[in-house]
Length: 184
Image (tube, rainbow, N blue to C red):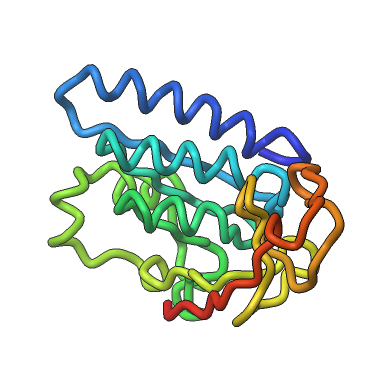
């Protein structure tokens, strides 16, 4: 999706699809074909859909199109045991010169059963997930940040109100300073 509604709409439909998957016995997956930047206001919806999918054993895969990466969808794939790949960034120069079929690539990488994937030699780049926490406003990686107590958004500086959910912080305890250095 693109613009402000793409990932939010996809995460809503992904969560609904995950609920349907819970009622069946087959291995269920969701494949995001995504080509735009993350929209910080959609973080909560994407993470909620990801945790829902994880709880009911639905794998979330992401195939990025274009030059953007999505930290949100990297985390979704990581949480659910799925694959995240940015095809145009992950391909090395030698492979980029060789002819390929995009549909064959999609079928061979994403159609395999999640258990079968363990035995496959999957494309390089899908295993490196960026779990570094970054400020929702500046997009800079943080070791220490301020966390909204309502939506758990993270900021590099203390704020009067949350830029994501709009919560007004009336006392010093509403926005807590946390050490958030994570190893990827």
